[in-house]
Length: 316
Image (cartoon, rainbow, N blue to C red; front, top):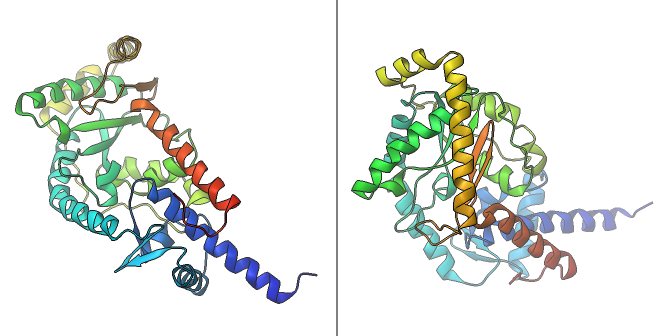
């Protein structure tokens, strides 16, 4: 039988380790966390007493560092200052993002729009993009995406294309996210829904698996979500809710997939210099420049291995 004192020590170490893992993930993005954020993104459930005790011990032992309300793996105050500046920019950008998201919801076959990427986590670079996650009607994703990207071509004329980064499309026939890992779980729970409450709530319900990765986190559906339509939307859907629409959608799927394969073969790069990549399927389309998701997972796994090999040391 394990002595009670040993059991308590084991529980304390487990609590400290899960806090370190949480900080390690966000450290990939040079993003220190508040106490509430750490608890929200923990990989296991902890009581308030367990959490506060473990956090205090990590600070006391200088395993982690505190700068005002932020905690970090590094004794680098500049990271907290950088975050604060990014938070202020995000607050200014969110109002614009909400209006743009509501506007995108007015396009044919768009059923829900949510802000994603760094902005959904409350952070923006000086010339940051606005990323959007879009849910479309089943079997009409490729019509919706094509129309939206034709519109985006116009935004290049005014140099506002960075405000319309529609990076992930999924349709109502296949709302489950296939990749189940810390990256996708974090991206899902931090989505900022803008429009289409019915579709986004169904999406969250189908992807309940995120609770296995982030049991203390919850997805948000905001009361101020827009419910918009337009004459263009109604007329287009009225004309294509038939067999012709099926054929058009299938054509755009094949055409877009082949076009992006050609781009990948010639090593085309985006405006940030990254090799362009679009992962496509009948019911989804997602931008993944330079295999970004895989890169983040690999970096995170390296940090976790470092933790296990050298417990309670600062991770470089």
